[in-house]
Length: 518
Image 1 (cartoon, helix red, strand yellow):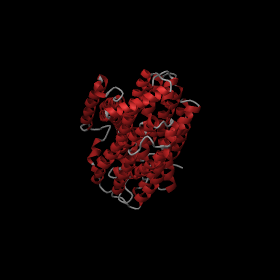
Image 2: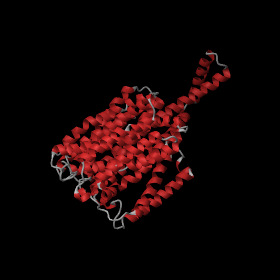
Image 3: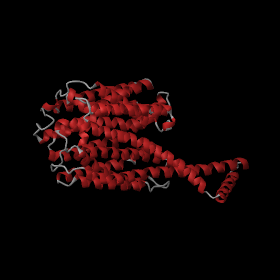
Image 4: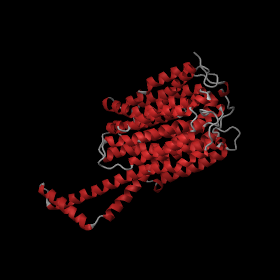
């Protein structure tokens, strides 16, 4: 059965077969990205590297991925959308095998660069095909279906990656992509075909645009990923990366706005709804990925949860999102104003983040369930309507350029969110440590120290050693309290950001079609 992605698809079953095909290709990247994070300490140990050196396994992938994301629309026009998708899946699968066989860390980083470059086109291309395949009034339901797969993958991947790494080897995390990639290739080859307007639109290659974008985005991503580790602008390396990124990106914007055939269609931002929706994606993923990093660290560092336990008790958010997404799709189909859905979704998600900020050291696994469920349910009313309304004014032939810009904003929001919130937590820890130390009454400190010294002496420890250990215990308690407060401040910042950004939703126009154009 030959089905064409776009208006030519008349069969209802045909549309859903295309949806299954592109979703299979998309979740392969998400499974890999989420699972590798769990395996990082094992990779470092096996390849005789430090954990800091092993973080380049993540950074190298993000850099290559971020460079390709904005030009995915141009690549689809140059090669054809189906051909690009098959090239991306094939390249990602082959690079995954190479990663699993890598004998040294430098080789693994090289293969991760190739994997990131191949994976950069997967998300925007699959979304563009899906949005073209379904008519306007059905696109909300299609995005809800697609969203379920996109949410399930990150839920299962950390648990699956932890199991494979612990019981077998970290290499199997990469080999896992092989059967998924082969299945995706078969489905795409069988069911997906390009509409006529996709084939070979671009006549020349914008070398200057691609080059400036690659330099600017690479330096920006490295600066964001390594900034906190190198103490930001006190490092000459970070300052150099920042200057190069700013100069290259300014030159890129100037070039793209004046050249006849740009690689990135920046003029799409003239459409207010698209510009606001893309900005929302950046804000949303800033908070989402920032909290995804903070919460597991809080569980493991302060509450002593094992890595697998922390991963399992982070799944209720994804499960709640998955279960509520079909409801969001149904409401879109019933002509509910998607702006209200986004507005309420932001407030509900913010309330979930606020509930996280009320936890303390006495929290157990079950204390995380309700905040996870509340935040997850709120996110389900953000993903589908936001993806639908953002591209409402976009024409089908421009869809690839639009989805690549949206995907880039999400990637940038995630990177900035992780970097900024990590730095924020570290700075707040220093602030709280100084404040708690200053607020401690000298008499109370002396009384506590004496009591601890007496207890230690009763255990057979000498007076001098007991006094020194007592002060050490007091200091550890101050540091622990300061760390807890800093993590809770970070989660409160996420909640505040979502609330502050919520009024922006009314800058978007109401979709013309009943189900939204996309």
